[in-house]
Length: 284
Image (cartoon, rainbow, N blue to C red; front, side, top):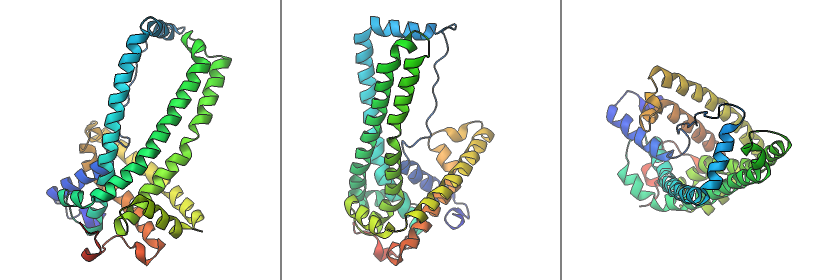
């Protein structure tokens, strides 16, 4: 991280920040929204909401469908951009440079293949979340709309939690895809299925080590989150703005990525990633 980012060069810092921002586009970092409490107590807010939904069901369905479709389209677009951006960011760090346009063109096939796999995982995760919300609504809506939390609401909550547990293997698959399959695709094949096969063969019998790696990575991520919180407070929330926050926190982002890639290099000589020679680059 020190070698890549220092001595400080503004143009290189901004370009690397842009490639990092593109690589993580749509992955967290969003703002939080809150609905003001207008209930006046005793669940009046839920009652008013349920009455409004019943009285304007057609309007609610129409507006909700449009909002959902727009959000889904934006999410898919961000997923496509970030899939190719991950290879751009990796290429910049691996060769200690700051380029956008040339690697963006070169890794077109890689990005499209990765996008397809990530889209499947994202749609499965969305289906799980919607199923959990639907189960909770069907079981607990009568009590929630009445402003009470009793037996049916508790059962609905438990059922929703059980369904949401299905997102754990999907999250693990997404992590393995980014941490091991992406660099394998970068070094060897542009197709995600080939990257999965080669990565799985390399990781065979090393799952205990991989688990220890992720436990340490979680600890490092907690520390990074604390640093991000402090920096955000010191900059009066300026660091929470899109792209600006990535540039400000670029050392943390580069450090965490390099930690992953240096562990990846332990899989064998064919997985040497940082500082690979120019002739090892994928063909245009």
